Image 1: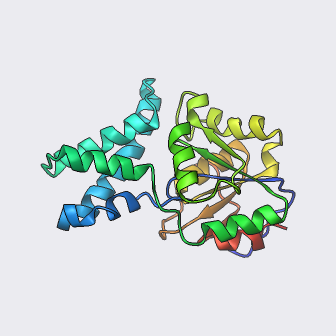
Image 2: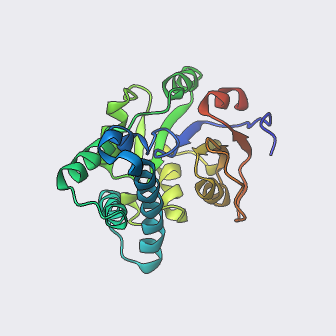
Length: 228
């Protein structure tokens, strides 16, 4: 997938939040000293189970919001490593509301906004979680709208979630470029009809799923050069 391919006819840039704008591992990073050698394992299991629970709940028809799912995933990670520390659990959940954004995010979004693109988030997160993350990273003046799956009652990659951005921004699906670091989310958005820039921060392999990203970039600073 060439990184220098361009995308034309775009009116809005829509971003996944967790793992794309915000570093999901920064919550554990703030309390690494309290977890010691288990820090990376806990953080990775927490994230893996968080995603798994969104897919499984969607398939089972038993929706719970992302805040609950995030708590359940952390509890699983703690149980897996026999950690019983209510204070640490509380502090990690609080830290999830204050995730760090990736270093290039403010500058990249500022460039895109200066070029007249509408900027929005489309995320599994609850409205309160997204508002907190955006405010904590100082992106309030850049992000115009937060679209939460709570308005669809089901998680990504259900097409009803991607439809929220089309209806909310009042543009056609092909006039939206969607950015995600999650390969499965990039595939889902492409299958729906978005143009997609896959932000492959972590050197993932391409998914064997319907829908292919239009471009692959390493971080968001490459996005302005892609949009013509």
